[in-house]
Length: 383
Ligand SMILES: *Cc1c(COP(=O)(O)O)cnc(C)c1O
View (cartoon, rainbow, N blue to C red):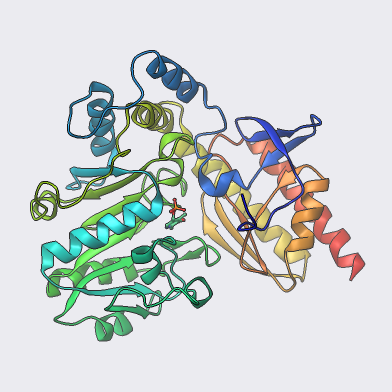
């Protein structure tokens, strides 16, 4: 793995649902959730079964040939998608789904300006990086794509000022993940939708982290009753098998000619079999409603902790997507959580992030809350 990752002292050997075990058999509740990839739970039984069955048929079929497993997945995906997003390009990661979205919007509009939000995260390949805000990710890798600018998240007047005749696209996460779980303020998505309609700008929602039931609704943008022109998905969509998906309105995909864009691995039957199982699990096993009910218990509990611990400055999020901003660094909190059997994630140096599998039980959430309480007591005492 080189030294590209900041790593924590756990060697994970096995997982099931919202639990993982290390090599010595120690059990953890997984609120890191593979940065959201473990959305449908580790080794979700439907996913395991679907992958096993697909392995006995075929693993790879290029997009230039038909495949029933892929067709079934695309039907399920467009069936669950926001109305109108009926065309899909399958790829293999979040960044790739953003790259495709950028190209599609540019081709469709014939323009090249890109407006993203301050605090945005869209991936680390060249195009996606150009619309990612944090300058630390870009240092030494320039020049970025031409025409990218950033507007404050939630400020419609600023967005109006930063868009113009040359703007091809506006891209945003309805709930910003990497920058610390920041929820769009009321009205912002609707206003952005209206602005993009007025100016013929393609509105792209990156639901890679906040989509697929995470927030208690299938799509985060449903909380604001707003439908984008393009939606990017990845992370948990195929139960841990790499997959990205770029969903568009038909008129946008109609601007893309055969051969303009492609992905060799995209839409492999293996990933599609797993993806169908995830979508089935989300609806038939009640994972989206679980995210809502267990998620509201989580947020209530975190707010109670905020009243108790002065070190917590803010609690944010929706459903099973939570950010806890601290007045201290999070590293010791995460290390102490590991000792006590809870895996937590961070966003930046002082924000705890929780992205547990949507299968997590209320009992496990209670234990997570008790653990954070105990950890904040012990970390606070050391100071
Ligand atoms: C993780 C993430 C990406 C990038 O996904 P990769 O698969 O790591 O390329 C893009 N956007 C958002 C919102 C993400 O959370």
